[in-house]
Image 1: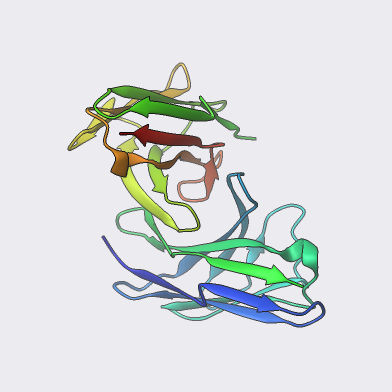
Image 2: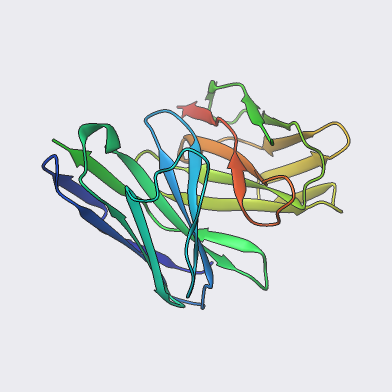
Length: 115
Length: 113
């Protein structure tokens, strides 16, 4: 299957700092990428849809100013957790949509721990 | 709003057993349904994708069925192996979309020696 690279795989930061997570589609151009959040022993919750060249679409209850998404190229979307707090600690997973197949390919995830 | 439920939440079986995981969804107007595998602390691996027009898909020891009218899907794993131990998630697109996914609650499978 296609490869989606997510970096970093793990990050530990102090409360109040900002953290950027990158999601790269290596095998195909992705005009649409998705960002999910997963709490321990829970399922994935869609946070936002990242659209190349336009603003991201956020799901209800997700703070736009807290989770900044930039999709500046057809192969890269970034999620920045601004002014991170301990409650933002979670597992963040991105996916890239291969439109012709209508299949999402997932990154390996980023575990964020905010101290 | 689409809701997806998986039963059981956890399952432990001895190696070699056949097993069935269940997934139910509230809105039957779906484009497709996917089954994923997630190992602890890892991302997702897509196992099977069933289009709305299909009733089942097979890949190796895995067979997934789809009954749209009743809002149900099953994942059948034949001759289970310890390497099958993982969390299995089903997902369907959000109501009215083809790509935004709603995930089920997952089934944690443990296959013992």
